[in-house]
Structure formats: C-alpha cells, structure tokens
Length: 363
Ligand SMILES: Cc1ncc(COP(=O)(O)O)c(C=O)c1O
Image 1 (cartoon, helix red, strand yellow):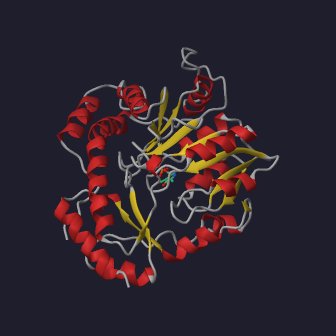
Image 2 (image 1 turned 45 degrees about the horizontal axis):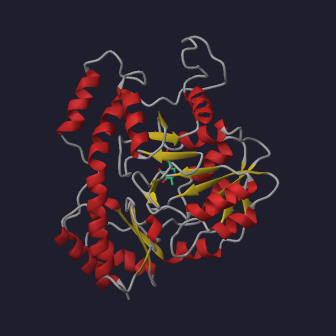
Image 3 (image 1 turned 45 degrees about the vertical axis):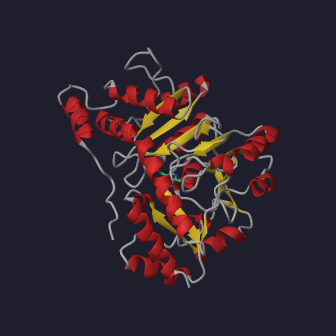
C-alpha cells in the first residue's frame, strides 16, 4: 500500500531556510514573519494575521485579547483536541462542553444555544477534520447573545463556508502548523482577524506588551513572548505555496474513496462547506475496533477516534469545567475513526486501493 509520508518538503523550503540562515535575524523580526502573516491573512480572506509559536497559544491569545478570564464561561465542543478547552482553562475561565452533530462531527448549534448563560463570554467553534461548522447558525447565536465566535481552525487552512474562508467569519481564527497539519513547520500557529483593536491587543500579548513603534524596552501590557521564528516562517511560506494544490488533490481522492465505500457513514459535508482541507477522513462504522485493526493491518493508517470526550480527560474529571449532556459525542467515541490526510495525497489508483481496503473491512 502506497501511503505518502508526511510532512514533505522540497527545494523551496531549503531555499527560504537558507535565506534566513544567511541573515542576522533568525527570530521573529525577520521580514519572512510579516510576509507569512500578510500572505496567510490574504489566503484566509482576513485583514490581518499574527504568527505565533503554536496553535494552542493562538487560542489563549484570542481569549486574553477579548478580556476573558476568571468567572467567565466559554462554550466549546466535547470533541476536539484538548487545546480547544485547555486554552480556556489556561486563561482562568471555565470551558462549558456541549455536544456535536453526529453527521458533521461539528459543534451542535442547538446545544450551544441551550448552554448560553449570563456568564458566557465567547464560543469556540472547531472546524473538525476540515469542513467548517454551520457558521450561519452559529453567527446568529453569537449575534443574538452578543458573544464573539473564535474559530479554532487548526484543521481548516483553506476551508470555506459559503465562499468565506475559515477564520474570517468570527472575531478571530486560530490555526495550527503542528507536524500533522496540512501546512506545517513542525510547530507553529497563526491568528487571523479583521478587527484592528483585537489585533493590537493580541500582538501586544504576543510581543512582551510592546506597542507598534512604542520602543523596544517599553512594555505597556503584561505580555509574553509567543513570536514565531523566521525558520518556521520560511518553511510555512513554502508550504503555503503548495497548499491549494494539495487541498484539491485530497478532495479528489476523498471523493474516490467516499464513492467506493457506500456502506460507511462518512462525515457529512454541508454544501456550504464543500471546499475544505480533508485534514481527516472521518467516518462511523459498526464494530469500529475490528474495522480499525483490519484497515491498519492492510497498511492504511487509521485512528480509532479519540479515546474519550474532552471532559473525561483526567484534567477535567477533577472539575474546573461545566458539562452539558453529550450523548452524540459519547457515541462517536465508540464507533468513529479517521484516516490522516496523507492517505489522500497519493494517486487515484492508491485511492481506489484504500477504498477497497475500507470496503472489505466493514462488517
Ligand atoms: C482542533 C485543534 N485545536 C488546537 C490545536 C493545537 O495546536 P498546536 O498543536 O499547534 O498547539 C490542535 C492540534 O494540534 C487541534 O487539532
């Protein structure tokens, strides 16, 4: 079975890295960092972007820039990587876990609406696996209750909702460039926004409380150092050049696999979300564990979903969160799986072969 490795690099990464190495600025003040910020913001249809060390601190920065802290509640989905919730806890606020939709795997707007309280200060929406969550309904809930939406777009570089790119609908979009992501520098993150006031606050947090043109040794806020290095930015500029073609290739191969395996309930992709990364090819099957073992035995990488909902992590079993009923998320833990996006980066023949393996593994 020919499953490409990930990450991949070309001469282009080498060329840009070389340029940084020959300069006297390897850190966050090399021109490649603002170049990445501008290119990525334009790509995601946002006015600004802020490059950072990873996609966990970008979430923390977003929450902090909104003034969220102790006593505040933030609504998050019960299914995601832990950073979606732990960022809320790290700023001292309380994550409120709500259920997901069983077909899209994204946060259920009805459950969000029910979870809003007087203490709610924001909603974190994850575009899980690539397809964007229902931003029409979620934006309306946000607007009705005066709550900002933070898009956790770690999986969604290039994803669209009705022609609008991830991170351009909420107050901010948080992206991750960690090793497995569709654009990667091993680690890295970026925050997109079109709000200049929000941007200024977030940038000050990221850069030791400085102000633009405010002086190197002048610190106006309690900030820290979350700056992305030029070495990361060099790799990411090269990765961004290849991303559109890779997203298109993944989509073609995902379609081949979906069509070739009619007996799997693949992630439902709403028409408005049909442009997306395919970061994860998600599905639900009976006898998931046997299915996953059979697929992996044929050399196709397959993960049996998360082992539990976020609130069942030891971290949250100790408290510090609020949990609303999440029967759908609990069911997904039992019967869902995903293929990583590298499985979609081979040839059309490879996609047919993967479809054949999945078909044979379903019982
Ligand atoms: C949904 C989601 N949010 C946030 C993160 C955190 O990103 P990072 O690993 O870059 O800190 C990740 C992944 O790693 C993720 O999958």
